[in-house]
Length: 438
Image (cartoon, rainbow, N blue to C red):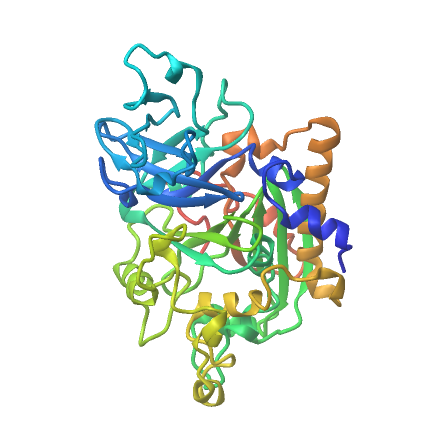
């Protein structure tokens, strides 16, 4: 159980909040490069409870500026993207990607007014098809982009997707550090399934071992196998909002999420799946993009998206599965095939996380299987307290290589340490394979 005061500290992300201040120390992935076209229509963005507009200028550079024009607050989401700037359609004020006002058509020709004002703008960087922004205080000396393996491998090795989830960021993140739910929520009742789910189903009562790391936290779930070995699944929580999940059998790849807060009640789920040293399996990519037999995978499929509504932030990434339609639960499927009756992996998770936009954690009754969730909250609370009280910046905000970590799924002898045996395979090295047989 979490106190109401601590719950508020963790879930509120707007300007001036303790969690919002911490997150603003980091580069944040917020769009795919393909979403913005030079001189194309601006995209409405909402990040950390700020309403913004993203655009790509005539030279191909990305800008992220306030949605409200400085002049009289007209929405720049309607702006004309032309000649290296975004022009407000109300009175023609034009802004470049750095937020400078470069034209004021209605002001006197000799006026120097434009030199004295500037709109809120955040620096953006692109790498391997993903756009990042920095919303923090240190704009004179920007921190380096994080060296995340999924954003460093070649395009044929990775698949990245975005979707909007209608709940607080922490609810979504906690689902990904919780290994206990996986064989239950994602399980079948008709005896079919892939190898890793069958392994997990053999022991539904895992024990947990949580280890603090420079990057955040390792949450290891231990299950006993009939062959006398121990099956360890190690999920990683990487500050401030990343989760990494272990590879699956048959077509193994590494995967994870950035749970980026749009505001207190909506989350941009950035999911990545990649193979560390080979092209992603074509079948895997097809499943990610198209789903299978009407079901979703860990990624939202193209057919799972709603028709875009440009009046809302991230209009291209709202899905058909939401609280208003019970995430399209199929009761017949629940009775005959799937334990949950919910149509696919990410839908199952989201449905269980979106009972209310911000859950009242004072009502929880946590058990021993919730050790990873408890420790994740503790890591976050300690980080925001250290920054608020002493100005201590987390290691992941300053060391780009702190993100070079992987999750693992290991079969070990009963007396083998997952910490020691997993040290090498949990260290990401570009071009290196898994380091064990997934």
